[in-house]
Length: 144
Image (cartoon, rainbow, N blue to C red; front, side, top):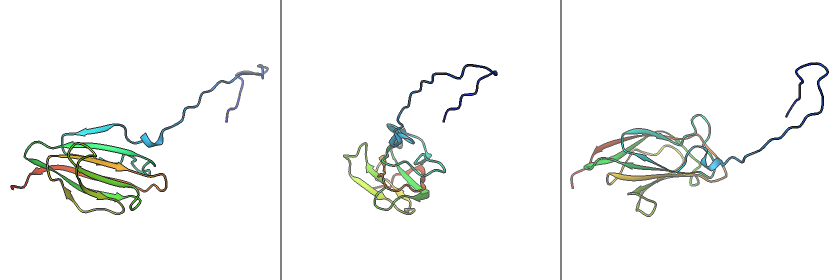
């Protein structure tokens, strides 16, 4: 809505308005590109107190120092079961072996097999939930 209110009485009532609209790409509302993580941190879907965005594809490449593995503990997790999913790949891409897949309610703590993990959060266009939050730490790799 636009309302014209002249600064002074008797001002001309004819005026011209030009505007431009830009579409919003909600699939990139909370994430863009692959985020590189090399220190312990807390990761989340990015939505804060809002539901996560639909049709998202968010990726985090997490690399621990050699001799360490990556440990995840979820402080909160609520996604649309079997639709909005967090994948964990053993390595540097979605071509690597899948170590875990989580959706729905809070999953158990999870530790990677090696020092490099690609975490990928994918959502559909149906329902959005509260999302997730995970503490990421680096722990000593088990001896083999």
